[in-house]
Image (cartoon, rainbow, N blue to C red; front, top):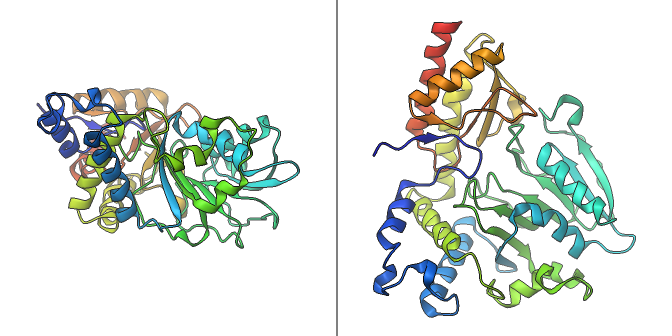
Length: 360
């Protein structure tokens, strides 16, 4: 079977290694006579998978010992309310950097809870095509929230902001495990698995342990981070198969040389496509400013919707799928997460050049 080049924003492409390993074990996991999806999460058979995945995250991401690694459910969107619910109380305030649709959604949930918020900076004035350079933090803020990579608008922080000691909370849903983090100012990092870590169903939360002290007893049990930290994310039934797939994904990443090696590969992959845009004399126009272009999501437009529709139709005949852009930006979008092979990006870049020759 010929694999498609899946440029969808999420659920997204997975490493062939992970899929083939899962295929081997889907019916009879480690000679147990059962699929892993049938195994109780209270058995050593599953606990070994669970703990190995946590260990791989800690090893590859170089997570310090004063952070817990949690597997939660409800998607990254549930973190939009869990974070302010647990970390901000009474007249306390939280800072937000707004760089796209997802960071907008995050602050919206905090406001629904009645939390006091401050917008440190926003790039909405130019439809989120840049990362603001002037950031005005609140010295007393309980955290600063940011989205490291905006999947819709294709902007990515190239350097984490200095927050003067205020914990930095990062939504890394679309670029987790793609570059190394300096943990010095981090309070928490969270990510839905379905873009760059595995299939849908689990949310990875990496949180500094001292932040649990801010929780209130009035918060429902399942919505407290400490509940899951104390039980190693086994307080209730975890998303067993997704966690297993995250582990396979990380084994594949480790086999490539780890996160630094992956970052170098991603830079090369994205360059193929950005070069095709930049060398097109305006036939293709990228959305993001060059100094903050995402290595994960590349939105671009053409001079007419008819031309874009033709582009999508012809690309699909070449086994390239998921290139339709989001309605708020329009046009096209190539999501090139870790698992996208280099040949997929090269194939798209070559198609873009051929399409321009025929239709320019």
